[in-house]
Image (tube, rainbow, N blue to C red):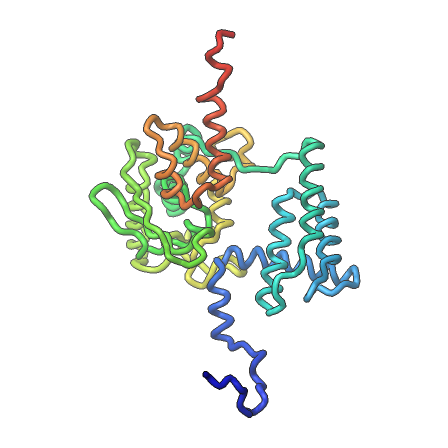
Length: 339
């Protein structure tokens, strides 16, 4: 039988230490956009705790419940409160405290969600971008400027991929591979890909020259090559002087890569220029939602292929919510009863 008697050894003085390289790997396990959002939420939580003379780390169940109630009092969307609690949980786990007791906070959120619905509260959702709206937006972009060429590529590629704004911002030139049928894009960073396996997205040539994603990307890559950019980020920041990748404090990284916020700003700016209704409500998610509804409305729609293409999880409630908007009219039971 194996002897499990502990042997004498020197006291462990480093058992609670984590090296900088290990912390870096922990950070890389979470997408940069999520890390920023979590950091902001954690900062807000700690400030509230300081003001309330409560301990932020580790936080008690009562503190989390009170904080959830505080956020509900600000009339935030239930999903926003859920994200705040997720950020607090992540901070506890990362610091080695384990998951905090969120049972009370969840009950608060459940009650608030019910009241939110009963009082007519609606979760703000970015409107889906239709093909008609997409064409109108692209028509406002100046093809003779770097900004116009880049923005067109961002909008049409994002729509064709059903991409999240963070996925678009994270693309590198090396992630694009020409194909006889169009373009193969490797998505290496994704919200739902926790293991970092990546996925391939086939982007076919479009039937409309102005909104063809493959040609739009080719034009942008040609512009990049003209400026000596043969590798690195696909989409770069452009300053007011027309300089590519100019480093702006607090925005993007040193490579000049755009952020998810830049993607949202590009879409919103084009929507406003096109005079679309509720233009200011459009965001990066409008591309993703628009792709889902347009693809599902097509005669030969395949739900499984749509989900795989856009990187939705199996049984995604978000995806089914988008498709319900199509089915509400296409399969309406009141349409054929002779009224």
